[in-house]
Length: 215
Image 1 (cartoon, rainbow, N blue to C red):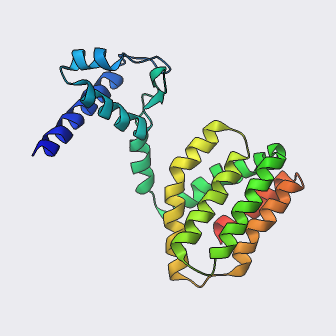
Image 2 (cartoon, helix red, strand yellow):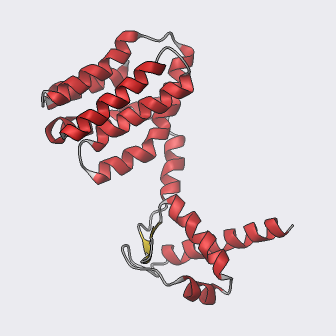
């Protein structure tokens, strides 16, 4: 019963803090009041405030900087975006990948570093080890490879958007791999995209990415 009560108090604190954020009590980038101050304002314990802040940090609303405090990261709850993505159709997901992923990979061909390329080669090698084996293991490796492709564009906004969207990509990939035979030619497209990055060829990288998305 005590655990249920504690969890309920944390949920109430989260709701109160979300309400304050929605009302514009704090601006994006502003340092939030300290735990003692929030505890006093909300009439709850510091432990409850601490756990509530962890929930907000996990959801992406708040950034906790060790030794510095908590800062408001956004006023739009990322959880709502994730939930909206989860409801999107297969066609909507495909369209989004064309706009987000393919264009990011084009930028990556122009901006990637030698370190990026090494990391991508390693991620692709790990994916290859699982392509004909366990589906869950392959999907996890493949999503990591695609995230690194987007990260190689060195645009934090694109990276963050794709990180939220990757759950949709993973679900679609898992469905495809369990419903149709695995095609080596499809997997080989990953290596060809990486070759295009190494050759600094954004148009080829985007074209191959779009072919992969449609496969």
